[in-house]
Amino acid sequence: MPIYEYECAVCGFTASHVVLGSEQLEHPHCPDCGSVETRRIMSSFAVVESEAARLENFDTRKPRDESFYRDARNVGLWAKKRARELGVDLGSKFDETVEQARSGKLIKDMM
Image (cartoon, rainbow, N blue to C red; front, side):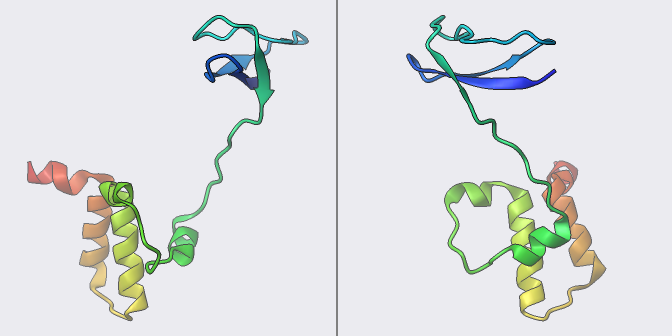
Protein backbone atom coordinates (compact mmCIF):
# COMPACT_ATOMS: atom_id res chain seq x y z
CA MET A 1 0.00 0.00 0.00
CA PRO A 2 2.11 2.92 -1.28
CA ILE A 3 1.88 6.49 -0.07
CA TYR A 4 2.24 9.13 -2.76
CA GLU A 5 2.73 12.86 -2.31
CA TYR A 6 0.92 15.38 -4.47
CA GLU A 7 1.48 19.12 -4.78
CA CYS A 8 -1.38 21.48 -5.59
CA ALA A 9 -0.77 23.75 -8.58
CA VAL A 10 -3.24 26.31 -7.21
CA CYS A 11 -2.15 26.79 -3.58
CA GLY A 12 1.15 24.87 -3.39
CA PHE A 13 -0.01 22.60 -0.57
CA THR A 14 1.68 19.18 -0.39
CA ALA A 15 -0.42 16.23 0.75
CA SER A 16 0.17 12.51 1.17
CA HIS A 17 -2.32 10.01 -0.23
CA VAL A 18 -2.47 6.31 0.58
CA VAL A 19 -3.27 4.22 -2.48
CA LEU A 20 -5.17 1.06 -1.62
CA GLY A 21 -4.70 -2.01 -3.81
CA SER A 22 -4.88 -1.30 -7.51
CA GLU A 23 -6.65 2.02 -6.97
CA GLN A 24 -4.82 4.76 -8.83
CA LEU A 25 -5.45 8.40 -8.11
CA GLU A 26 -5.04 10.41 -11.30
CA HIS A 27 -5.48 13.79 -9.66
CA PRO A 28 -6.61 13.66 -6.03
CA HIS A 29 -8.31 16.70 -4.56
CA CYS A 30 -6.14 19.12 -2.60
CA PRO A 31 -7.22 18.89 1.06
CA ASP A 32 -6.37 22.58 1.53
CA CYS A 33 -8.23 24.30 -1.34
CA GLY A 34 -10.15 21.43 -3.01
CA SER A 35 -8.54 21.85 -6.42
CA VAL A 36 -7.93 18.80 -8.66
CA GLU A 37 -4.90 20.50 -10.24
CA THR A 38 -2.40 18.33 -8.40
CA ARG A 39 0.74 16.57 -9.55
CA ARG A 40 2.63 13.70 -8.03
CA ILE A 41 6.01 14.72 -6.60
CA MET A 42 9.07 12.89 -5.33
CA SER A 43 8.74 12.15 -1.63
CA SER A 44 11.52 13.06 0.75
CA PHE A 45 13.26 10.29 2.61
CA ALA A 46 15.50 9.91 5.63
CA VAL A 47 19.02 8.59 5.72
CA VAL A 48 20.03 6.99 8.97
CA GLU A 49 23.57 7.77 10.02
CA SER A 50 25.29 6.35 13.08
CA GLU A 51 26.49 8.66 15.84
CA ALA A 52 30.09 7.71 15.05
CA ALA A 53 29.61 8.57 11.36
CA ARG A 54 27.93 11.87 12.24
CA LEU A 55 30.81 12.76 14.52
CA GLU A 56 33.38 11.76 11.90
CA ASN A 57 31.73 13.83 9.14
CA PHE A 58 30.96 16.87 11.31
CA ASP A 59 32.99 19.99 10.41
CA THR A 60 33.44 22.28 13.43
CA ARG A 61 34.91 25.08 11.27
CA LYS A 62 31.79 25.45 9.13
CA PRO A 63 29.73 28.52 10.08
CA ARG A 64 26.28 27.68 11.46
CA ASP A 65 23.09 29.68 11.54
CA GLU A 66 21.21 30.52 14.71
CA SER A 67 18.86 27.54 14.43
CA PHE A 68 21.83 25.15 14.73
CA TYR A 69 22.57 26.38 18.25
CA ARG A 70 18.95 26.06 19.38
CA ASP A 71 19.21 22.27 19.16
CA ALA A 72 21.14 20.84 22.12
CA ARG A 73 21.95 17.72 20.08
CA ASN A 74 23.97 19.82 17.63
CA VAL A 75 25.83 21.71 20.35
CA GLY A 76 26.75 18.43 22.05
CA LEU A 77 27.98 17.00 18.75
CA TRP A 78 30.11 20.10 18.22
CA ALA A 79 31.58 19.82 21.75
CA LYS A 80 32.48 16.14 21.28
CA LYS A 81 34.10 16.72 17.90
CA ARG A 82 36.00 19.82 19.05
CA ALA A 83 37.42 17.99 22.08
CA ARG A 84 38.55 15.18 19.78
CA GLU A 85 40.17 17.65 17.34
CA LEU A 86 42.08 19.30 20.17
CA GLY A 87 43.28 15.94 21.41
CA VAL A 88 41.69 16.51 24.79
CA ASP A 89 40.31 13.59 26.75
CA LEU A 90 37.89 15.07 29.24
CA GLY A 91 36.92 11.67 30.51
CA SER A 92 33.69 9.76 30.80
CA LYS A 93 32.04 12.44 32.96
CA PHE A 94 32.31 14.88 30.03
CA ASP A 95 30.74 12.39 27.61
CA GLU A 96 27.99 11.61 30.13
CA THR A 97 27.22 15.31 30.68
CA VAL A 98 27.15 16.00 26.93
CA GLU A 99 24.75 13.09 26.36
CA GLN A 100 22.48 14.29 29.18
CA ALA A 101 22.47 17.78 27.67
CA ARG A 102 21.77 16.44 24.18
CA SER A 103 18.81 14.38 25.43
CA GLY A 104 17.34 17.29 27.40
CA LYS A 105 17.71 15.35 30.66
CA LEU A 106 20.28 17.80 32.07
CA ILE A 107 17.89 20.75 31.80
CA LYS A 108 14.98 18.73 33.25
CA ASP A 109 17.14 17.73 36.21
CA MET A 110 18.06 21.38 36.83
CA MET A 111 14.43 22.50 37.09
